Image 1 (cartoon, rainbow, N blue to C red):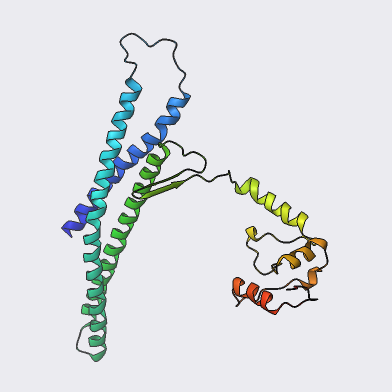
Image 2: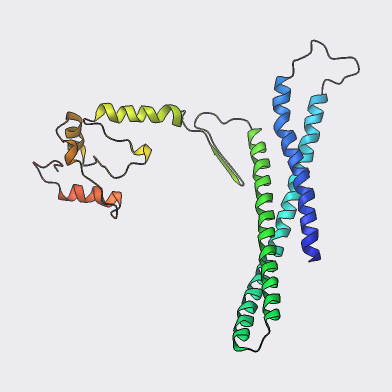
Length: 253
């Protein structure tokens, strides 16, 4: 129990300090960008004061990240210990219940065992919540560090321990580019073909170049589109179309 109380106190201190650092680091770039530049620095002010403040915040953030990493590592053996205790109390609760049903154990003993089981479960739940919270804070601090890195050039790739960065060869936006795909399928196929980007897998118009040409010319009516059964993988269905296709059919070989 002493270890548990000490762990809860440590995580509160670490998380509060880390939250302050995270908020400060997130706000500094915005504040610096919004602050108007003075025409001349006041007398006695150092031109490098913003840089010095930023350096102090960086050091504080690094120190907080190290403290959180150490605390995160210390949670693992504690969590394992609580899980073992939970398993033990679960087994004891079953034994107590069996003895009570046989009449060899009093009801008060059974209730005491149930309270011990509830406490063991609470200890496990608490330590898991602490671990999840620390992981979330560490991810947020990592995101801030990534945000301060230089942007990659178009098509650039960078791999470091714990992080892989890639900037695609062309810009992509769900809001702008998905409608382009939709318009492409609607204008190239007659009747219009539903875009798979929106999650449609029931309908298929895949049957080789000739079949796609028929669809583009409008030779294949909507009622004769192939329908993929729910229990058949898409790739297997496409292969069966290619296998079964014969000249003169909707999906010629």
